[in-house]
Amino acid sequence: ILKAYAVHDPKVGYCQGMAFVAGLLLIYLPENRAFAAFVTLMENGDFRGMYGHGMEGLKSRLRQLSVVLRAKNPTLAAHLETNDVAPVLYASGWFMSAFASDFSVRFSGRVMDCLLAQRTSSFIMRVCVALVNDSL
Image (cartoon, rainbow, N blue to C red):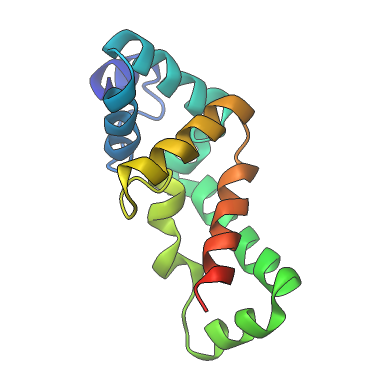
């Protein structure tokens, strides 16, 4: 899947975090459907910007997470900032792997179902905020 995607979209090519997403898709789908789902995520789910040159999409999402946390839970956001716990330390892998790198297959599979159904990157943001809010 990853080799085929690199040929399909040479501008993005391959990035290490893609393997978690592709692997998760392959657990549930045959190879040709997993590739189609991967392309859908990249193009319609806005994953492409996260893996692109300079990872500008990932940087943008991490900044957005900081802003959303400050708005939703200012006490938690202040605590994290006071202790130098930036979103890059805990959420980079969440965004890049759709939670497949740090959570169970069952959890990340459910996230993947929702991502493919909704085709919006805002779903991952909502999950991130819920996880961080529930952790304290």
